[in-house]
Image (cartoon, rainbow, N blue to C red; front, side, top):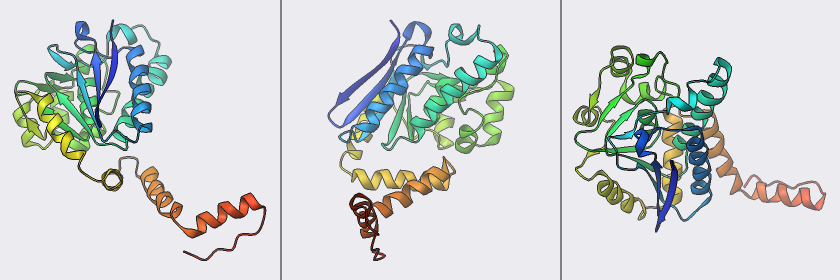
Length: 255
């Protein structure tokens, strides 16, 4: 039975797509499970890093299972399938923890968008990237024409989306999309994650927030999050809360 599995190994979590019969393609149920597991990871302060992996198959993720969306009407397709998946991938991209996509095989369509939503990507030598949606009469729906343009650049995304070309692991590395190519990408990703565990969790989280603000990954929310974090440590915030609870006028000091 297909699904999404979450496994904790010390301070590293692994979120694994498990639908090998369909080349690890997403179903409606898997999207829901993926979102639920992200919530679990976000709320667990002991997790330092998240690995996004998939079960052994010829693809890391072949995108979305056509049986899940093929019969949807235009409104359902746009509102629920596309926008729903987009929200989940955005949540992955904005997760407070560092994330690593372990691309052991081909990442097509939604699979490439999934990898793009992670902070870092480790690829196997023969893995390739593609946006094949035009071949079945649709377009990328989970940020393939948005986040990917920021990461790979307009010309490269046009190659894939308009001309159907695949990008090799070597080229992905040269473009900076892949951080590393490894015969055992999971082992390589685990070694990277182990180093994250030695760093200050709070410093890593704030670094990620500032970098995302710089590249317009939900900039407004990131700026407000940084501001809220700063004000929460102030004496004025403590005084304001205490005054509210005591039903008195606050005496702010500006500290």
